[in-house]
Image 1 (tube, rainbow, N blue to C red):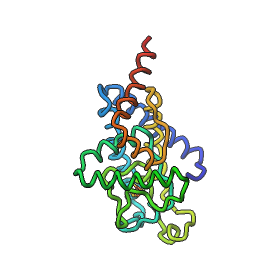
Image 2 (image 1 turned 90 degrees about the vertical axis):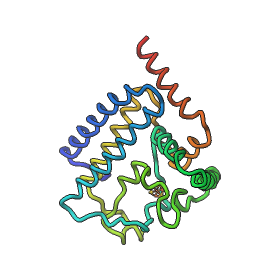
Image 3 (image 1 turned 120 degrees about the vertical axis):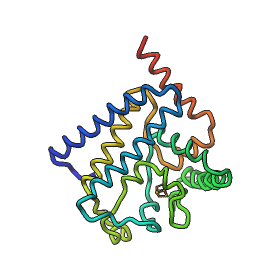
Image 4 (image 1 turned 45 degrees about the vertical axis):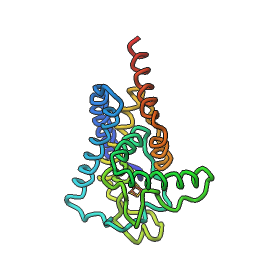
Length: 219
Ligand code: SF4
């Protein structure tokens, strides 16, 4: 995000604090791991709302199905709980779809591990996002007001209000998980979702860190 004015920074901090408070209250009541990561359902819904409201009185973003510049040659980051949430949703898809996703992710991870250039996000197929309904926050936030800028790799003009609102949702959410002792560091999307899908005990292990932190806090 470009440098904010004092007023914009104050609005951003206030919005992030609000999300953090809601997040802490909701996540703390989660009795099991799947429920804790389900907070991302709320985050994704509200992030879409924030972006849509920001565009109510201004020209819409120019993004449309089949336009995939931002899904190529770009690193998308997610927090660990968001990757775990996306992985849990992928596990609900038909077996053949899951198998294809896992295969494409595996190829992508192999390329990343060899530090080869990542041509495109592994969820991109035929210029469409195969996990559009459960795509991460970073992709929900991404928008462009100039197709030419996307095509030529120039700085992409974006709606500041949408960016601030979306970023505040993301930062506040990460702070909520962090405040409760969860591991919520940011990771590359393909690596993080592949790890969550290929290691069946990752969600349990991640949740145990939270339980241990809570025990520690109470002792
Ligand atoms: S998850 Fe979907 S929207 Fe996001 S970069 Fe990948 S293909 Fe594009």
